[in-house]
Length: 221
Picture 1 (cartoon, rainbow, N blue to C red):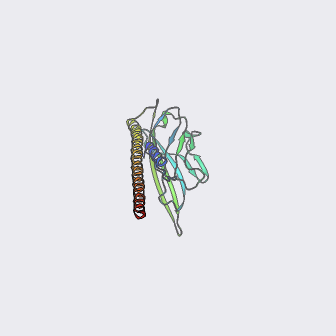
Picture 2 (picture 1 turned 135 degrees about the horizontal axis):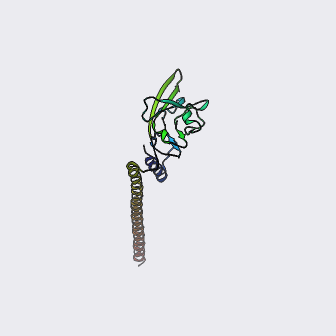
Picture 3 (picture 1 turned 90 degrees about the vertical axis):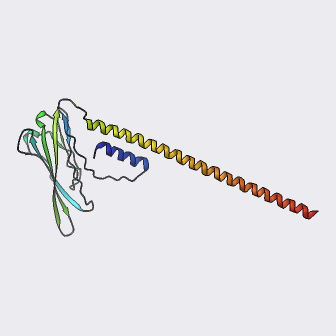
């Protein structure tokens, strides 16, 4: 699910007054970072049963480009964050769920990106679901293939996504305009019909009154 899709969904909610409550959406992480800047390594795993209590621990692993093995770089649990590898000391910040042990967003933020950060990142959700009579353990893995560039570039997918977003917004506005014109014409037609019925009723009332007056004159004669 792209950022543009979420923006369009938000727009639909605001336009039509739908009740869009806060919800978990598994948005994929970006995969291109710029050297010298910060970058968010996204990792979201939505819990399927929202009514069930849960607790999660997040672990991040990194495999540099050209290497065969992963190294443990980060842990986040009920005791807080721990940076596990010297390469990332003072360069990783928690960017996920706040004030909750029932974590669904395990994202982290990488500061001062370098070309040595190019590689594959794996995020592990170790989640325990607490049912009435038992506990259920699940492990969910998310993978981010990160490339580091000297200067930000816009990919084809990003451009197409933005174009589609604007097309959708314009389409919604045109649709609303058509609906407004239709409603105006319908209300106008209903108003004209009501006026005609009122005029007919008034005419019949006048005709009936005239007939009664004529009948009274004839009786008087």
